[in-house]
Structure formats: C-alpha cells, structure tokens
Length: 288
Image 1 (cartoon, rainbow, N blue to C red):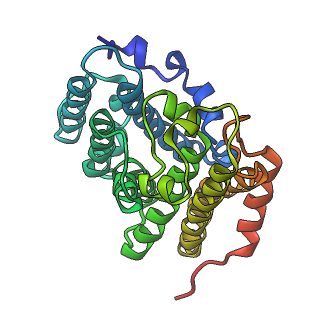
Image 2 (cartoon, rainbow, N blue to C red):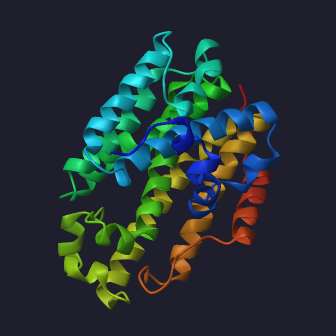
C-alpha cells in the first residue's frame, strides 16, 4: 500500500517540480508575490497528491482516497490532518480563505477514475471535468477573495478547457493505462477504432477527430477569457498564466495536425509567453 507519510508526500521528494514542468505549470506563477505563490503551490501539492493516489498508488486506491478525504475533513473541521500536503493548507483554512467542497470533488474525480474508464458522450466527459478540473479554478478564486457567481462560471469554462487539452495531449498514454477520455460517440462518428489510440501514428480519421476535439477545448478556453476582466492585480496575472498555458497547448495541438501519437505535444515557452503578453494587453478590467 502506498505510504502517506511525510517523506513520501513532501512536494520535493514526490517529484512535484518535474511534474509541474510536464503539466504546463504556468511560468507566470514564478513572478507572483511570495504569499500567493506559496498558496497556489500548496494547493497544487494537494491536487497532485490526490492524482497520484488515483493513478499510482499500490493496493486499494479507493480506500486510500477515502482516507485522504477524511484527512481533508479533519483539516476543515479544526482537526489535525496527518498528510503533510493537507497540513500545508491549514493557514489558509484557518484564515477562512478556503472551503472544503472543491477539494472533495477532486477526490471524487479520482474515485470515479477507478470505476469509469470510458465516456459514452461528451456530456459525460464534461460532468467528469466538473469534478476533476473546475474545482481548481474555484479554489483559486477563493484564494483571490473573489465571490462572484459569474466569475465562477467563466472559471469553470477555462478549467474544463484546460482539462480537455491535457487529455488530448495524453491520448496514447491514457489508452495504455486503460483509460479513454475521447467520447465513444466521437470515436464512432469519425470512424476511429479504439485500438488506434495505441498506434505509433495517428490515422487520417484520428487526426480529424483530434482537430475537432481541440476546437471544442479552444472554444471553452475562449469562452472563459472574460474572467480576466473581472480580476485585477496579481490575481489577473495568475489566471492569465493558466489560460495562456491552455491556449499555447491548443496551438501545439493544431501544429501537430492532430497526430498526438507520434511525438509528445507540448506548448512552447515562447508560445506561452506570447499568449500571456497578449492576455495582459488584449483584455481589460470589467468596468462598474
């Protein structure tokens, strides 16, 4: 069974730095004020620990995720959590800057991953993203002190778009791990057999499918961009970093022509910085 000791789950010893680089961790975060940056990295550590329990833990993963869920409840209930990643949240929790529900949704997403390996229609995948992705944006808004229902909706669009582009980057890896996030109805519509997801190169049909799915993700990211007009200061810059990472990944997916199998599809640093700069000057704070 996977250990949940401080040694195993401390961010530096758990390889989080390398994983940040592999997962489009926004370059913008490294220039944020220390307190905000520390809060975001702490949240990332918790989210990454939950994902590791769901993806890599030996033994009964559901049981271990439920233990982690109980640890979160202890933290938010004025108890003393055992997991060091959860303990890192305590200052923000005690200050009333975080709520439990988004973190529990992340746990539920990973429990779902143990039981659900295919998604019949796109609406099912979106429902999964409401557990696996949207809570991250809600947590960021909490840390920024943003209490705005419309901002939450826009944040959800961005986070779902970010989750989708990550899935489209990792189609082959996910297939080898027994998971297919491409909706079954879309595979059938484009004439792509599931076995093709494990090939060395994408077929013309699969390339067309991936271009379609990339367009869907891009529309969600663009549909959430108005969130920046509701933010200011470092919060606006931080969210711009996340959105820029997603848009740069869309560009990389487009550049691949839909062949996400023959080589890793990763956004360039130049592309990310270009989008970050454009978002800073191309969007304005909402007036009124």
